[in-house]
Image (cartoon, rainbow, N blue to C red; front, top):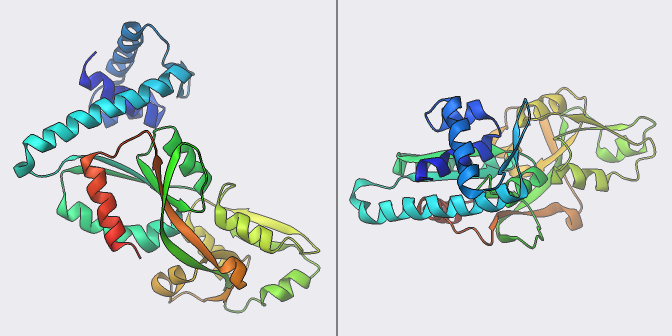
Length: 289
């Protein structure tokens, strides 16, 4: 067992695919398979469930992933401590809900990459529930999601409170008119697990004709569906006014009891930040919002 074996195992746990793990670690698929088998033999335990399409971690694999990350992180931090003059390197794997990726994280990320070009940075977008799962399973170092979050394994820190508005096409009737109508209200939303989707559904739960969802996996698709008048959605007001003022959209505030919702940063309590990640997080705290 050596440090490269651990990095290969971490990549395989993250990508759940031998070919993609091989690409990420600059090796070939056969070597990934051989190194994982050697790891399992040396540890005398099964780390992965294998299928023809993907791999998933066994309970022992989940436990070992934490250890592997701690070891590789400690080595990376030690290398940094003795080579500070050569610049910061390492890896940062961040998760972010779609709206915050556009509204909050992009400018901070751009500056961080410019200041620390040798850091390998991965940004994954998803719903709040998806990102919580990836952080708890050690697939992400941390994530910016919609709060509040109460999870026994996670530390959370509130970053900013977003003012949420219902977003409609310029010519679409007000939500009150839609709610009283005899047709279902159509919502353009991300998949299940999106907090904005859940909040808008709760707000419209008295609609007599019910609700229908138009699900998509990109913010741009949601805005396209809303702009053509097919559906409405719920997003931070600032996202529309700052990034999409040219689109034929209008926003209507929610009642005060629903209007403010926090964006929070989460990380596992038992998973220390690498030096690279600590610097990135500090830059986000200083520049977020």
